[in-house]
Image 1: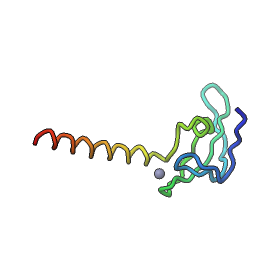
Image 2 (image 1 turned 90 degrees about the vertical axis):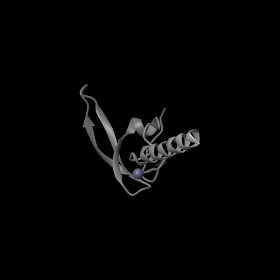
Image 3 (image 1 turned 135 degrees about the vertical axis):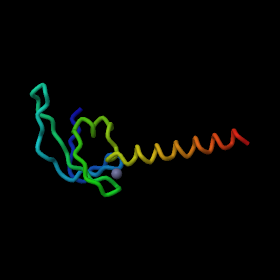
Image 4 (image 1 turned 120 degrees about the vertical axis):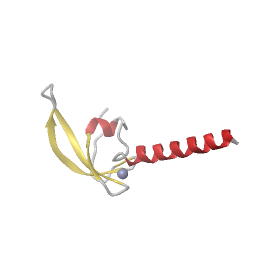
Length: 83
Ligand SMILES: [Zn+2]
């Protein structure tokens, strides 16, 4: 896969702003990191692999939103069961 990542690219809720300094992993390999802006306004640093594999699609707010939705669903579900 030779997909290149450039500023302006969108991955889920994240838009690539720029590449940041690579970080060294425990196995002494360099990992490329990209600074991305989430739709909610937060800036996060995401690994190149995570963007490519679509592991990371938001700063984490997407997950939070989902949890909220699930919570709502379960409260509703329990309410209906009690009736
Ligand atoms: Zn966000």
